[in-house]
Length: 132
Image (tube, rainbow, N blue to C red; front, side, top):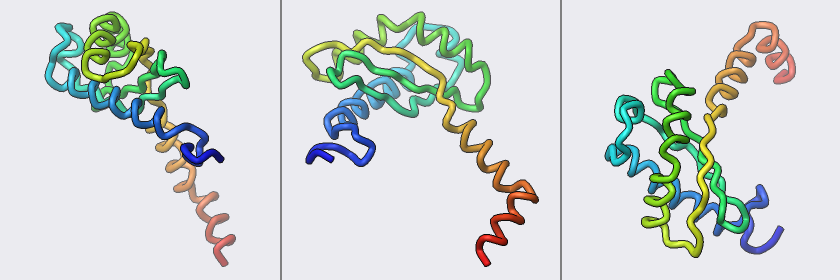
C-alpha cells in the first residue's frame, strides 16, 4: 500500500475531490438551482462520487429520498448533466471539468437484502450455533 492510499487502494486525493464534487452537487440540488420539474419535486441524495484517477470522470451515485421514481430522477439528472457539470466545475477547483455519469445507488437495497437474510430464522439458528 502506498503512502497516500486508503486500504481500498484509492488515493486520498481521489476521495477528497470526490467529496468536494458530492458536496457541490448536493448543494446545487438542495437549493433547487436546476430548473427541472422532476428534480424540483423530488429530494435527491448524492450518496457517493467516485473519481477516475485522472479526475476527468466522476461516477455519481444518487438515491431519491423515499425511494420512489428512481428512473425518472436519473433521467432528469442525465438531461441536466451539462448544467450540473458546469456548476461543479465552477465550484470545485480542478484542472479539468469532470464529466458526470449518474447511476442509481444500489447499496441501500443490498444492505436491506443482507439484513433480511440475517433475520431469516434458519440463518439466525446457524449463526447462534456458530457463536456457541
